[in-house]
Image: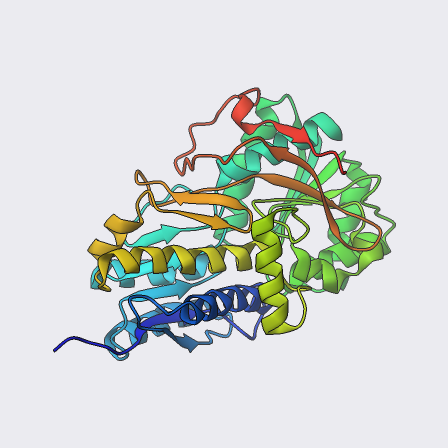
Length: 384
């Protein structure tokens, strides 16, 4: 008998806990894409139906809930996770069960699984362009601050090499727990001020990111003079940090809300219609949205939820995403993405200042490229 029921997918994004600021934006992106797909007739006439669980930002819960989705809910396709530590909880489960996992978050690279589709930027798509930009624009003396888990440590390892390759110097490197308060960050900020770097590279995430920027501002740090540069700080966090404390700081990402393109205007209009505002739109939310659409394209071709069939169909598949055209690299299941560098203005809005000329092929096992490789060099964006 032919199954005419919905296509059921698992969704694991936290709506509470330390990383919920970002994961709620990812959940919204995924749900918006599902609404669009279903409104257009679904996939082969059948709607996509999400089965959502809240891991509460507790790392172990992602793995437990992935197991529950596969064993109890009989679901073979899962979207989810922000932190690398939570991804690593899910990874062995989807591999053992031969399920397919869509991970819409930037991460440290140096990983491949046939059961994972990687939708976020990796170091050759964000760290290399950002490191090059910092040294050309601000100077070669950089201070590192990060949250204490896998992604910040590995990201800083790559950025350290980029800085040193460019003749720069890392003046200090500190890691703090995810739940670090503004008061605790004051000691870190005092050491930064004493070191007098040209810029700070931050891999602090979640609520800690907000607390760090506020502590820096309260101590007299100003982004217009000595910026905090990040790969993770996004519109949702800037909204909570506030315009005064965030002005002048920098983020490198594949997407920003203020990107001028027809695809992005359509995305923002659809987002506003569903949620009433675009204040919490983020690059990770855009990645979740785009990955859901990529999945639907592959499912339309295969007509089945088999992981092997979907993976084969996804390889080379492209989508006109809000950031521009993206595609899945058949060599490594990562995604060709764009590279943008934006600075926060006095109103608390990201203004795109530089971009790489074309989408960048993902290189998860980064063979450290020369900084003068044209593919990673940014060009200035001139406002019209």
